[in-house]
Length: 540
Image 1: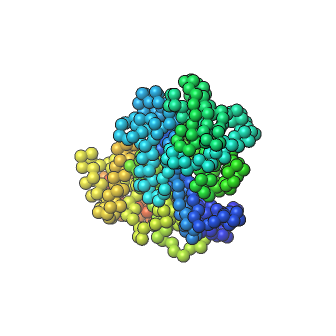
Image 2: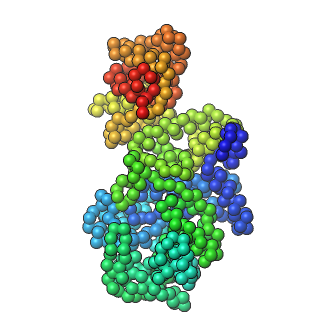
Image 3: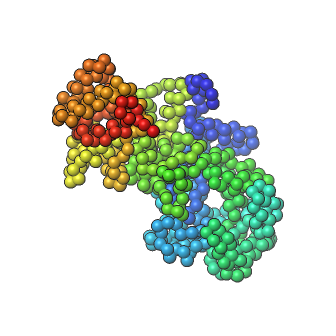
C-alpha cells in the first residue's frame, strides 16, 4: 500500500494475521456459512525430522486462529499429521537399515532410535514438543486414526466415484496424466507392506472396496518394483489413503476447515484440491495464504531428507520461544534464510519490539500499531505485564567469549553487575544459558553489518580505542568519552549511541567505560576492522 503509513487504516492489531482474519470472517458471511466455529488447519508430514518450516505452518495457522478469536469468533487449530505417508528415502543422518522400509507408511516403520513405537511417532512427538514449548493451543489429529475410524470415508467415496472427472481435471491443470488411468487412492499392499507401488484400478461403491495390483512406482529417487500382489482395500479403514491431490479436500470437507496456508512447492496440489473441494465434495475451499520456503545460509531449501535441517529444538537451545514465533510471523511472503546468525538478529529485534511496546501506549499511527501487534502475536496475545531483563544478546556473547572457561558464569555475572544489569531474575539466567550454548556451539559472532557511522564520530571512536590501548581504567575510559566528544564539538550522547550500534546493534547498553575495558584493544580493533578506514561505514 502506498502513501504515508499514518493514513493507513489499522485493522485489528495491524498485522497480516489481523487482515487475514477479517477477510476470512467476511468471506464466511458472504458464503452464508455458520460462524459458530472457524477452524484453521496445518498439515504435517511425518517422513522426516520436523524443521523450522514444519513448525512455521502450524504457528502461522495458530496466529490466524488467535486473530479470529481477537475479533470475537470461536476458532481452533487442527494439526493434521500425515503418518500414512510413505518413507520415500532414508533421511540424512539416520541409520542405513531404514532402507529396507522405504515406501512403507511411516507409522509402520520402526523408530530408528528405538524409543518410540514407530518412525512417525518419533517425528510427531518432536513437532508436538516444539509446538507445546511455543505455547500453542491446538487439536492434534493422526491421519492413520482418521482413516482407521472412517472419518474421511464419505469424502473418499465421493472422490472415487468421480475419479475419471478428477483425473481429467488434474491433467488439464497440471499436465499429469497418471490419474486419468488409475484412481487417486494409494492402497497399502498386503503382499509387501508398501504404499505407492500398488495401482488402484476399480472401486465398488456398494462394498466400499478398492481393487489394486502391486506393479511398482517411479519416484525421484528411482524405480521401485512391485511384488505382483493383487487384492482389495476398504475405504472404511486404514487399508490405504487418498493421493495428496485429493486428500486435502477430503480433510477440509470432513473437518469443515476454513483456513489453511500452504507453501509454493505444493501449489499445484492445492489448486487441484480447491477444485475437488468445490466441485466434487460441495465444500467451499478454505481461505489460503501462500508462503515461500525457508532456505539455509547458502540458499538451499531446508529439507528433511537431505539433512540441512534447522529444528525448533535447536532454536530453543539458543533463544526464547517468543523469538522463534516472531521470526515465523514477521511476514507471510518471501523466502526466508535461516542460520545461527539469524538467532542473534531476531533476539535483537524482539528486544527492540518489547522496548517499543512498553514505551508506547494509545498510539494510532500504522507503523507503531503494527510493531506493537507483532510483539503481541510473538507472545501469542499474552504479552508480559512488565518488561523482561533485556541484557543484550551480543553483549553476553562477548562476555562469554572473554571469560575463563573454568569460571565462565562467575565472570559473566560479575561483569554484568558492574555494568548495572539485574542478573538474579529467571529472564537473565535464561539469557546467559542461551548465549553460553551459542558460543559453545558456534563461537564468536559477526558484528552488526550496515551500521553507518559519521566520520567525526568514527574519529572519536578510534581515539577511544587508543585510550583503551594505553591501559586506561574503566572510569577513565568513561570520562574520556565525554572529553574526546566535546573536544571535537560532538554531543557525547551521539558517540555512545553509535558505539552501542557498532558493538551491540542497539542505541543503548552497559556502562561503556567498563565494557570497553573488558573487551580490550585487540577485540575492539577486530570489530572496527569491518569499517573502511576514514569512511565511517562498512565496505561491501
